[in-house]
Image (cartoon, rainbow, N blue to C red; front, top):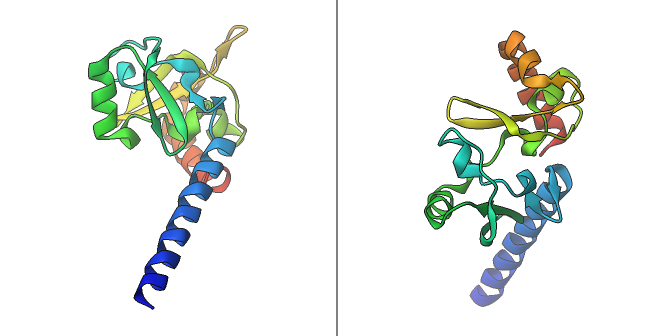
Length: 151
C-alpha cells in the first residue's frame, strides 16, 4: 500500500512538472524552446548582453538558455529563476500597456530590482523609452497582466 501511494505521488509530481513546462513553452517568448534569441541571460546583469553559444547551454523548466561562457552557465545553474527575463521574455512595456505579447530586441533591456526586463525596439519605436516615462504605473499593470496571461 505504501509503495502504491509513493508511486501515485511521483506520477502526480511528474504530471505537474510536465504541465508547468508545457505552460511555460506556450506562454514564454521562445523559438524551439530557446529563450532570448540565444542571448546569455547572465550577461545582462554584467551590463552588456552577449550572444550565447549553443555548446554552452542549460535547460530550466523546459526552456533552453545559451551562455557566452562556462562561468555564466555556472552562475545560472545555481539560481536560474533569478536570471530569467520577466514576463516570459516578452516586451515589458506591451505587457503593462495592453497585456499583449510583443517581440523584443534582446539588446534593449533594463535591470530593475535585480530582475531583467526586455523591450521592443524596432521601426523607430523604443518601448524602453516609453516605459521609463511611466515605469511605476506600467510595472504594476504588467505584473497584474502577467498573472492573468503568463501563468
